Length: 226
Image 1 (cartoon, rainbow, N blue to C red):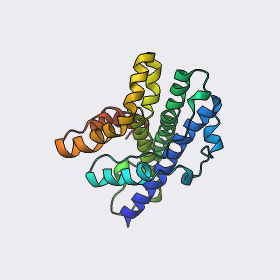
Image 2 (tube, rainbow, N blue to C red):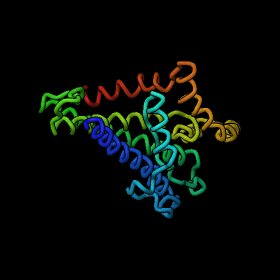
Image 3 (cartoon, one colour):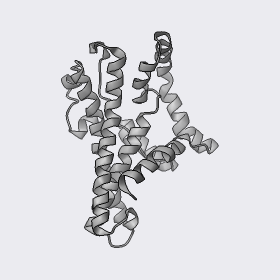
Image 4 (cartoon, rainbow, N blue to C red):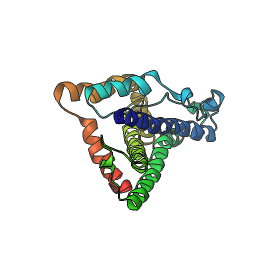
């Protein structure tokens, strides 16, 4: 029973993290003059409008089965950079909006964990197959929320299409380099599968896991104190 409740709690924390991430992209793009997301109803907080069959459902299941770190993404909010006065700056701000929102949510959740742990003498490891107090569930919920937001933030900052990091790169590229990069974008999803699924499962090399160990883990400890 605890495993079912734990899974439900993780899903409940995962959904707002990815929804707010995508809404942030659309809102910043809207503030930059692009009405596309608003016109398509994608500035809504309704999770159903943001569910992506692959990123929200299939990818987490595949990663869970393969034993890799579980994460995913919502249906990308549509943007039209033709509305931006400055293409490179607009893409940069829009691309960073989602990860920045995840960082704020992770920090906030981490502070809540610190308060709860300090007041209740609890640690994240208190979740077990035995009796779990209501405070223990709340503690774990906020701890997981901080963790999943950091995972989403750092994962999306990878400069690989279609991730947010690919929107940040144009600010650093010349026109010629940017043109070549746009040609590479069509292969981004193939590179993604190589790094996330093929290398860990067939060669025992887990670059994403190493990346999270160097980024997510220390920041999670800093924020939560656990």
